[in-house]
Length: 398
Image (cartoon, helix red, strand yellow):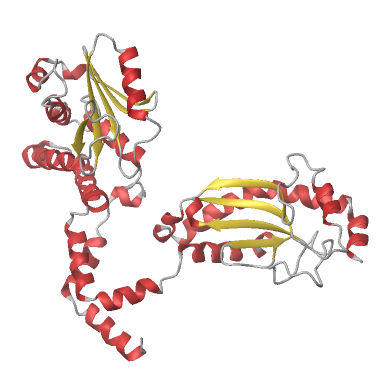
């Protein structure tokens, strides 16, 4: 695309009033987005459990719980309980259990139990709904039992259709909006803001029905060519992470090695002159090192992976002896590979999708914590290399 055309398309976007409205809307703070928990299933379950507990700090009493139970008890799946029974239950004695025997939410009332499986983005797996039903049967023999499958669209369970009542997050939205509308004046302002933020997040992240989502769809239709071009050329999330890691290396007196889009590799001053640099063998490392510390950055893995790596090297260099030296370190093990020898791996969970919403300080903080965790391994390798310094120098002088 020519620069003049790109400028014209961009000018058109800036003059679009919908773009201004979207920009203003996105600047409104939302506690769930600030904490980056809008798509986390366990956080949704935590918030719902808080709302369902009649004795919690929201001071709504049993308002939300009563409406939820009425919805569940109207199901024809449950023959020994109906919505009229809600009025006869002492809701002030409710117990709300989270992750009891891995069940997302459990509601206990007198002789009634409600088992809730909450699926935000994931799918049911490992026959879990059937397992939960058996757990309830075994532990609450004399209770009237009900089962709920809560999903954004109110999907039916794959395996337990006749047992679990499907409930949609749309019901959660409608119920909370009614509560705010009817009881809004008496609800604590902070609680009211939490609930409003939660409604917004459900609509935006799960249902795709909030006003800003609809507005963004309009903007996309009107400026499709420009936005598609921008998307095609957007930087990958891994680029920012790799850049930040590379910037941190010299601060720790680590020396950057051969790099790659999805790898950060480095050495330390104590060992850089003790490793061999290849002359003939092309191993894909531009600086031809025989050994490097390596961090793997694969977004699909949702983790950071640290390794020590001995590369394929010139035939004259004794890679096997180098591995034997490393195997003297506690925790190191023989490599499963034959060409690339990896003797230790350390993994840390990391959500790459969170990078765009992180400040540079937050990202740097995560990197430093990870570097702190791998530093003891690096120190052990340095110590072992120095212990065999003379031998390693002889090995490289071939």
